[in-house]
Amino acid sequence: IPGVPLDPLRVSYFLGRRSIVAARGRSPKRILVRIFLALARNSADPSEVFAIPPGRVVEMGVQTAI
Image 1 (cartoon, rainbow, N blue to C red):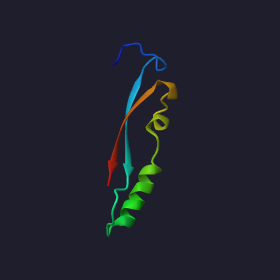
Image 2: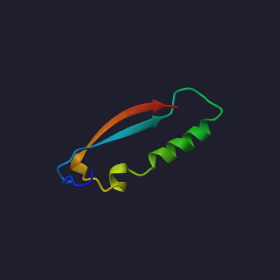
Image 3: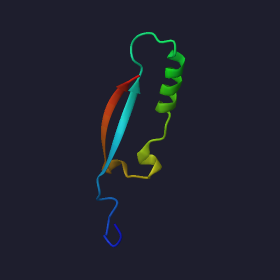
Image 4: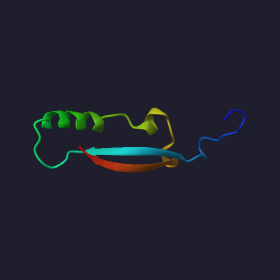
């Protein structure tokens, strides 16, 4: 907000995190699921991308099976 003094080291940042795991069972598209899981696992961490101080981050997460 323009004109509002803000100290980035005193603010709490809330981030959402989604963990993706492989569902049990066999699927003909199993290799695609494994490739997608590898890409999701190697994606950049938002707190690093936006240079958010690690001690100021609150993460809320959900685990999704595909």
